[in-house]
Image 1 (cartoon, rainbow, N blue to C red):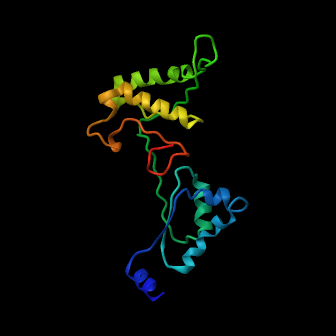
Image 2: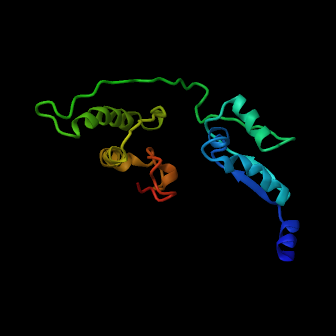
Image 3: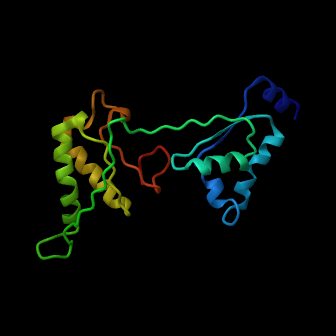
Length: 179
């Protein structure tokens, strides 16, 4: 225990809570232990960093209360640019069981026009999110984009940071890119 105490005294210690809104969602019924995270602060003096991409102002106040944060700073931001507008487009896609169609027909109907527009506009193409229930169709769309964009898939050097398209699904293994 002496070694631990010595290390703690010499280093800055942080308690980082990702998806902090879960303190609100799970605290009482689903995961009562999650609501007790604040007790870690009694074991070691630390700075708390609570992160959430989805919590609103009332939730931020409740999280700070639940974590017993007396003096804290809130930082908020959005990846959207000042001139960005959010548009929801819902399209009726063709049935995969209609005569002449296959399982991929509805997805090609959605993907192909978007990919062609992305290929034409490249950097001026707006941030776009396509939602899928199935991780299989997510992978299908991602591979189609890679194939149809070809050399334009990356904006500059070939690295994940420069990819024009990224995929995410809650079933993806952390940092592997695999579902």
